[in-house]
Length: 125
Image 1: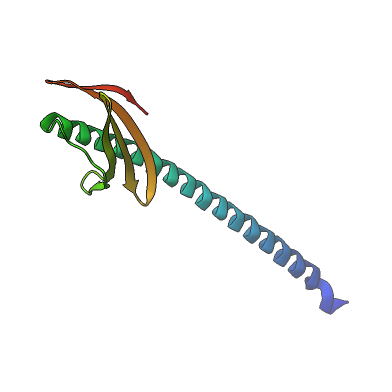
Image 2 (image 1 turned 90 degrees about the vertical axis):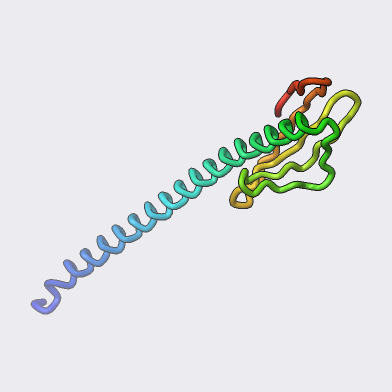
């Protein structure tokens, strides 16, 4: 009996320590998952605005060149976006772009109308 006095206390300490270790590991995994979610949301939001940068660039190019068209994607590395398509349909110009940061693509499109002396944006999606 004298030799078994500390066995119950040692078992209890090991059990409590292992439960605390499991709890802290679970919390660490949840924190890492939350951080990953917030980071992805930030990247999506950044790509959303980067795509609008390319729409602005395409409109600027249309103001300089009335016949500006893009049939193959044009990457704007400094703006972190790609002008996918700029094509004319009837009196409208369709502009399709996407933000390209951290390989997350967020597509945006716009419809513009060309006049002799101005470009009017009709809708932006």
